[in-house]
Amino acid sequence: MKKCPYCLIEVGGNPEKCPLCQSRLTGEGEEAYFPVRDTLKFMSFLYKMQMFIVLSVVIVGLGLDFLFGIRLPAYPNLHWSLILAMWLLVAEFVLLRQFRPGTGSAARRVTIMVFLIILMLLVTAYFFDFMWLAWDWMVPIVIAAMGTANLVLAFLDKHGNAMAYLLSGLFFGLIPCIVRYFIDEKMPVAWMICMIIALVLFAGVIIFKGRAVAHELRRRFNL
Image (tube, rainbow, N blue to C red):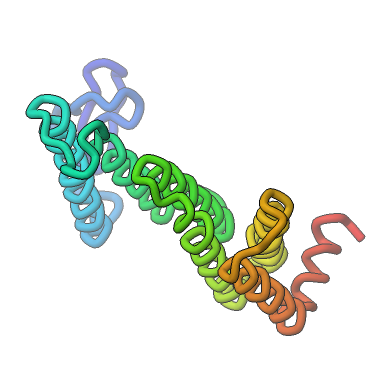
């Protein structure tokens, strides 16, 4: 049986580190209590590999930009490496939340992902001077895609979270359209299509998942 030289405890099985202080154990190990899950180890290796690649690209980009002064020809005063680093780090954060357990429901993860993508689109559009394209077309397309994804997740959900998908799709599908209209007193075609898609998806959830939504409302509000 292995022992921890610091915690002075004995640990059964064949672990490498102490479960309390994470120090390396000493002594002879026994037969492992639990089977080794090679699939999880392989997925962990792949995640670490892609994280290493992402951080390497960020470091190289920052070095080329700030140390060597390599800039984009059309934007000589723009530090493009900062925008690249923001996109890659946001993508890394989204990937971590998608596969890490205990980070909330799928509706919450999709909503956070869409919010970050929209924010990064607007930041990038501001520095690269295509704000009109992002605001009038790209943002409503992303919102419509999120509403469609929430509809699919609502049908696949088996844990009674249909209301979360319904409210998430309705909030991001209708509220931005209304705000967009009151800001400019007009609504571009893409935003009109986005609002129509949101209403159609809302009706679809009510028709096909109405009982689940009603049951969830009674459960959440003790009705």
